[in-house]
Image (cartoon, rainbow, N blue to C red; front, side):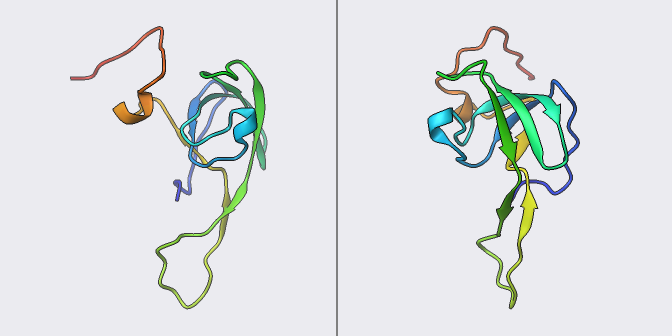
Length: 104
């Protein structure tokens, strides 16, 4: 489950946590930059891949935890994104970047 409190600003890099529309380039691990914010939808620009530079909309989706052993169904409507100022080595494989920072 993504974090419940998300503070975003325009120009913030984000990473997608779910496959929303693979035919539009919205796959798990896609990097985007926020261009416009509303309460229920985020407009973002794709950073890498075949669809780089394309504007897309990311809606809120219903998420349910798979490991909850509760007597009721727990659902939460939220955006399937996470802030991506840094990404892991596994997610960065296959991407070409102009500038790279290394924190030792």
